[in-house]
Amino acid sequence: MRVVPTQPGGEQHHLMGDGGIETFFAELQAHPPRVSPRIDNTFRFDLEYRDGAATEHWFMRVRAGSVRVWRDYREADLVVRVTGETFERVIRGETSILAAAFRNDVNVAGVPWLFAVVRKLMPTPPDAHDPRQSAPAREVTDGDG
View (tube, rainbow, N blue to C red):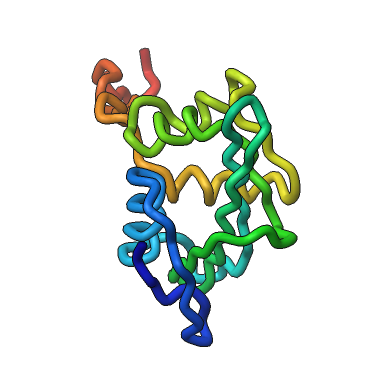
Protein backbone atom coordinates (compact mmCIF):
# COMPACT_ATOMS: atom_id res chain seq x y z
CA MET A 1 0.00 0.00 0.00
CA ARG A 2 1.21 3.48 -0.89
CA VAL A 3 0.26 6.83 0.65
CA VAL A 4 -0.19 9.69 -1.78
CA PRO A 5 -1.18 13.31 -1.18
CA THR A 6 -4.52 13.69 -2.86
CA GLN A 7 -6.46 16.75 -1.92
CA PRO A 8 -5.37 20.39 -2.25
CA GLY A 9 -5.30 20.73 1.55
CA GLY A 10 -2.57 18.10 1.73
CA GLU A 11 -4.79 15.34 3.08
CA GLN A 12 -3.39 11.91 2.33
CA HIS A 13 -5.22 8.86 1.15
CA HIS A 14 -4.13 5.23 1.10
CA LEU A 15 -4.13 3.55 -2.28
CA MET A 16 -4.39 -0.21 -2.20
CA GLY A 17 -2.25 -2.03 -4.72
CA ASP A 18 -4.23 -2.85 -7.84
CA GLY A 19 -1.45 -2.64 -10.42
CA GLY A 20 -2.14 -0.76 -13.60
CA ILE A 21 -5.12 1.31 -12.49
CA GLU A 22 -3.43 2.61 -9.35
CA THR A 23 -0.28 3.39 -11.34
CA PHE A 24 -2.29 5.17 -14.02
CA PHE A 25 -4.02 7.47 -11.53
CA ALA A 26 -0.77 8.09 -9.60
CA GLU A 27 1.02 9.04 -12.84
CA LEU A 28 -1.89 11.20 -13.94
CA GLN A 29 -1.66 13.06 -10.66
CA ALA A 30 2.13 13.37 -10.80
CA HIS A 31 2.28 14.35 -14.49
CA PRO A 32 -1.07 15.80 -15.57
CA PRO A 33 -1.61 16.33 -19.29
CA ARG A 34 -2.20 19.83 -20.55
CA VAL A 35 -5.79 20.92 -20.18
CA SER A 36 -7.26 24.38 -20.20
CA PRO A 37 -6.40 26.29 -17.02
CA ARG A 38 -10.08 27.28 -16.90
CA ILE A 39 -11.11 23.70 -16.16
CA ASP A 40 -12.21 23.33 -12.54
CA ASN A 41 -14.29 20.20 -12.46
CA THR A 42 -14.72 16.88 -10.73
CA PHE A 43 -14.88 13.42 -12.26
CA ARG A 44 -15.69 10.02 -10.83
CA PHE A 45 -14.72 6.75 -12.45
CA ASP A 46 -16.90 3.84 -11.34
CA LEU A 47 -15.04 0.64 -12.27
CA GLU A 48 -17.28 -2.41 -12.13
CA TYR A 49 -16.06 -5.93 -11.40
CA ARG A 50 -17.75 -9.34 -11.30
CA ASP A 51 -20.69 -8.27 -13.48
CA GLY A 52 -21.42 -5.25 -11.30
CA ALA A 53 -21.23 -7.11 -7.98
CA ALA A 54 -18.33 -4.88 -6.91
CA THR A 55 -17.55 -1.31 -7.86
CA GLU A 56 -14.37 0.67 -7.25
CA HIS A 57 -14.73 4.46 -7.20
CA TRP A 58 -11.95 6.87 -8.22
CA PHE A 59 -12.67 10.56 -7.68
CA MET A 60 -10.64 13.17 -9.51
CA ARG A 61 -10.47 16.96 -9.39
CA VAL A 62 -8.95 18.81 -12.32
CA ARG A 63 -8.24 22.41 -11.42
CA ALA A 64 -5.92 24.98 -13.01
CA GLY A 65 -3.93 22.30 -14.81
CA SER A 66 -3.43 20.07 -11.77
CA VAL A 67 -5.00 16.68 -11.15
CA ARG A 68 -5.77 15.21 -7.73
CA VAL A 69 -7.09 11.68 -7.39
CA TRP A 70 -8.39 9.65 -4.50
CA ARG A 71 -10.66 6.68 -3.98
CA ASP A 72 -14.03 7.93 -2.92
CA TYR A 73 -17.67 7.97 -3.88
CA ARG A 74 -18.63 11.63 -4.22
CA GLU A 75 -20.94 13.61 -6.42
CA ALA A 76 -19.05 14.69 -9.53
CA ASP A 77 -19.60 16.89 -12.55
CA LEU A 78 -19.07 13.83 -14.76
CA VAL A 79 -19.37 10.15 -13.84
CA VAL A 80 -17.76 7.55 -16.10
CA ARG A 81 -19.03 4.00 -15.49
CA VAL A 82 -16.99 1.24 -17.10
CA THR A 83 -15.88 -2.30 -16.34
CA GLY A 84 -12.46 -2.62 -14.78
CA GLU A 85 -11.40 -4.80 -17.72
CA THR A 86 -12.35 -2.19 -20.31
CA PHE A 87 -10.71 0.59 -18.30
CA GLU A 88 -7.49 -1.42 -18.10
CA ARG A 89 -7.55 -1.81 -21.90
CA VAL A 90 -7.98 1.95 -22.22
CA ILE A 91 -5.08 2.82 -19.92
CA ARG A 92 -2.84 0.27 -21.64
CA GLY A 93 -3.59 2.04 -24.92
CA GLU A 94 -5.31 -0.99 -26.47
CA THR A 95 -8.44 1.02 -27.21
CA SER A 96 -9.54 4.61 -26.78
CA ILE A 97 -12.10 5.76 -24.26
CA LEU A 98 -14.12 7.23 -27.13
CA ALA A 99 -14.15 3.94 -29.08
CA ALA A 100 -15.23 2.15 -25.90
CA ALA A 101 -18.06 4.69 -25.47
CA PHE A 102 -19.18 4.11 -29.08
CA ARG A 103 -19.29 0.37 -28.34
CA ASN A 104 -21.44 1.20 -25.30
CA ASP A 105 -18.72 -0.19 -23.00
CA VAL A 106 -18.56 3.20 -21.23
CA ASN A 107 -21.53 5.05 -19.77
CA VAL A 108 -21.30 8.73 -18.96
CA ALA A 109 -23.58 10.85 -16.79
CA GLY A 110 -23.31 14.53 -15.99
CA VAL A 111 -21.98 17.46 -17.99
CA PRO A 112 -21.50 16.00 -21.50
CA TRP A 113 -18.71 18.28 -22.74
CA LEU A 114 -16.47 17.16 -19.88
CA PHE A 115 -16.02 13.84 -21.68
CA ALA A 116 -13.62 15.78 -23.95
CA VAL A 117 -11.48 16.45 -20.86
CA VAL A 118 -11.57 12.74 -19.95
CA ARG A 119 -10.35 11.93 -23.47
CA LYS A 120 -7.34 14.23 -22.94
CA LEU A 121 -6.49 12.48 -19.68
CA MET A 122 -6.42 9.01 -21.25
CA PRO A 123 -3.49 7.56 -23.17
CA THR A 124 -3.92 7.16 -26.90
CA PRO A 125 -3.53 3.79 -28.58
CA PRO A 126 0.01 3.35 -29.95
CA ASP A 127 -1.24 3.03 -33.53
CA ALA A 128 -3.32 6.20 -33.32
CA HIS A 129 -2.34 9.04 -35.62
CA ASP A 130 -3.56 12.41 -36.74
CA PRO A 131 -5.65 11.74 -39.88
CA ARG A 132 -4.21 14.90 -41.46
CA GLN A 133 -0.81 13.18 -41.51
CA SER A 134 -2.01 10.40 -43.81
CA ALA A 135 -4.28 12.47 -46.08
CA PRO A 136 -2.97 12.88 -49.62
CA ALA A 137 -1.42 16.27 -50.31
CA ARG A 138 -3.63 18.55 -52.34
CA GLU A 139 -2.34 21.03 -54.83
CA VAL A 140 -3.45 24.54 -53.98
CA THR A 141 -4.72 26.54 -56.91
CA ASP A 142 -5.78 30.13 -57.25
CA GLY A 143 -9.35 29.10 -58.15
CA ASP A 144 -9.04 29.55 -61.92
CA GLY A 145 -9.36 26.01 -62.89
